[in-house]
Image (tube, rainbow, N blue to C red; front, side, top):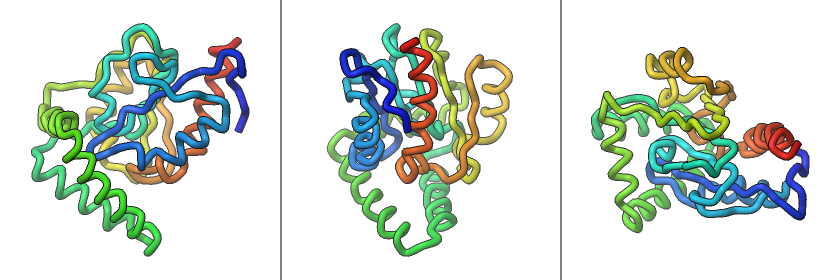
Length: 201
């Protein structure tokens, strides 16, 4: 992993969390970004925005960010009951080890805490998920990288095909399930490092 940002003018990053997401999920990612020379900032002031799942719908980037990384953005449009059922099915499908189950249980309990502490964004994501007319923003002012994980149903289907046809984004396929960015953050930092060199050139 390259230590790309300069010490005198480091690039800043912010994370827009998805449904029931919060800083506990991203602690390894943030630690690795800090070690690589990036500094954390509010969403309105960041050079790089990392949006996971439904978090892609919850921010207005304005002219500031140079890079927007959409990690496993939620594209499916379903009713809340179907969403919870799909989450449960995906949990058991990916629960291959006891270690994963323990981590996923901790994340789930923490997700409930996030929902109780800050219910508005989670309620907004449920509304977006059930609205068939709602689409991802254009993000015209930044370079956008859409990352879909191969074992993740949320970023697949006809909505992905439409984006591939209509949006001038970079589309990247990575292994793993919906939470891959939290489990293997190094894959995403490698992508950020690669394009940070372009920003600083």
